[in-house]
Length: 369
Image (cartoon, rainbow, N blue to C red; front, side, top):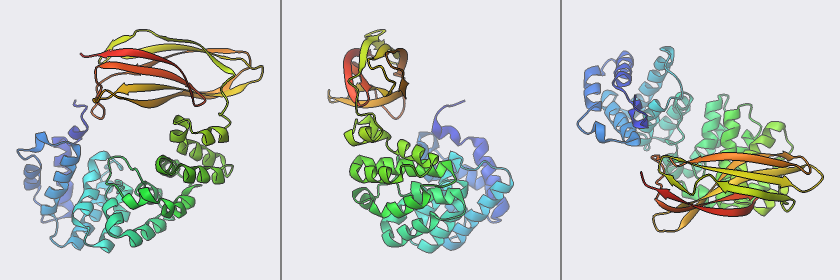
């Protein structure tokens, strides 16, 4: 079975969808839909291209009137749910794409459709072009959705407005000035849904990358509201913590590291082949008599194509270390080829980070296959 995401769209999936479509839209041609999906270019399309292709092919089977077509998609989703189709499956992201691609001219019909569709499969990407074209009314709608009874609609209000939503169309004005997001995030900070709270944390984390002072202000204001909100702001602080930001380290009482001593830092091998793991062992000592909290991380300085290095920080743990005690840890870092990152053969580096302070840089060489 293929492990490529684009191969989620199996022949069986497309056939089953075509059957359900014809049950809801009498004029839909099941065989034509399947034939159009698997055209001569299908095999060469990547995941997002396949999603766009599916939404384009779907348009031929729906009404030429967008208002009616958007209602047909809502009816189709209700039918899929009755037939036991799994909600929030990545495969169905082409349904929101239909709204994004063909509904930008009709704000009201599209907003109504997205409110229904996002319960079945997220409209976080589809909403982005609407935020750009209909700035004020769309932001008002997101605020309304932040109070919606359904958690997945509430999640759309925070996830869809994230300043740095991965894989999504940029919304420059929210990245430049995220203050319009604060009322939405405030409405959701104590949400009953962990999924919604995690989305809020991700939004604040996005904000911290461009406006760290605003993110810190939110974190400080929300501290102590509840155990769940405390977990939210800790997750929202992860980028600032990885950067070793002095104010966030102080806020979490992680700003002192002099009493922690790195007594051992050893690489199992200094040369590894692509596909292998870099294994390393460290020993740490708390030289104080009292227990102390330690945030333990390591940084990999990846070699870039231009010969420079770019650091990525990985968390090992954050816990209390008893006084006058030592801990020994062994970890592995994978160098397995993935579609989202290119590993370049050559000299890479690794360091250990104790409460935001970096120690003991070591070099290793990554070989080709």
